[in-house]
Every structure is written in C-alpha cells, then in structure tokens.
Length: 215
Image 1 (cartoon, rainbow, N blue to C red):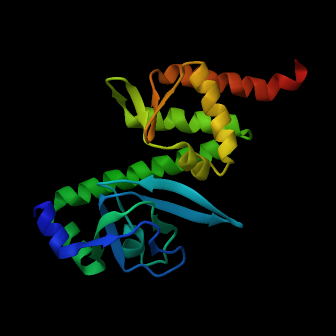
Image 2: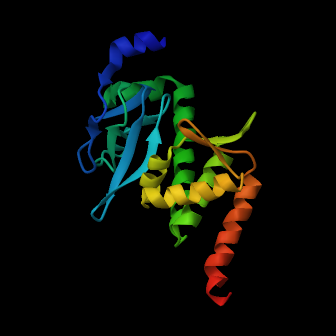
Image 3: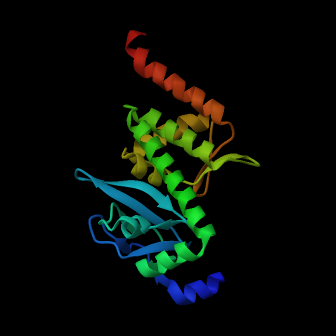
C-alpha cells in the first residue's frame, strides 16, 4: 500500500508539543512517523530524562500492544508531525500477513536492545565529558560512515536531555572537540570524521579521571 494511501487510512497530524502517550497509561495503538520528530522520555526520580528522539520511518508504542502492559515511556511531538496511528487488531493483521514487516520489527527491536545496553554503559561514566564523548562515539559507529564521516543526528540540547546533564556541560565538551578538530557541527547533527580519534579522547578522559589527582 502506497504511503499516501496509508496516511489516508491511518494518518493523523499533530502539532508540536502534543503528548501522544504517557508513561504508565494503557497502550492501545502504535505509531509510525511519516514526518517530524517525536521525543521518547522517561521519569527518573524528579527528572524527565530523554531516552531518544525518533524521526521519519521510526515506530514506537508497539510494546504495549505486544505485552499488554502500560506504556513504559512518554512520547511527545518535538515538532509538527504526521503519524500513522495503528490499533492492536490492525497491527496483528499486518504482522501475520507480511513477513517483511515482522522481520523489520525484529531488527528494530534488536537495535533498541543494543541502544539500551549502550545507555547502561554510558551511566557507568561518572564525569559529564566522558558521557558525552562515549555517546557520540557509539552513536557514530552505529550510524555508519558517509562521504564526510559518521553523522550523529542529535543537537546539543537533545544530547543534554538524553544524558541527563546540563546544556553548558555539553557545550563545554563540544568546544573542546571542535578545537581539537575531532568533530564538526552542522544543522541538526554532529559529524565525526574519525571515530578512532574520538575513542582515543575518551581513553584520555578516563586516564585523567583515574589518575588526575596524582598528577
């Protein structure tokens, strides 16, 4: 079924700031993003922590349909968005009737599990600088290399939200990376020409954190 036909049947438009679903609520639909961005966040103590920002082609909300449990996170439109809203019955029919959709979903769930493991690893770093550099390195490796390097689709404010650190801390680290010509910035992303250099800088930060007081 063509994209325009899908949108006529299942599509809805949502303005920026719309809360599509809240953590703890029952889940009866899943969503597929056709345009725009959606922020996925989770409350940790008194802080709303951004887990990821999803763009066109991504989907979310399927877990509540699969396991019949409440929403595990909150989804909010980061900008005006067009989404396919698919109920449980339609979702099940799509999975049963199309092996390609089922395989794509399994691959995406495996990717999300890997991202969760990376987030747990990131939390083991105590200093903000190491957490920023580790996030960029792992995200760059996952993104693959393009003509100019590895592009990480994240803005500095989004990076601060995902890592649960202050925006000024992110800015300080990025300035050091820019000065060292380890990364460059463009609109909406961070370009990493050489991930190995970023990994070496992370090793330096860890050595500094471990032995800095002995210097």
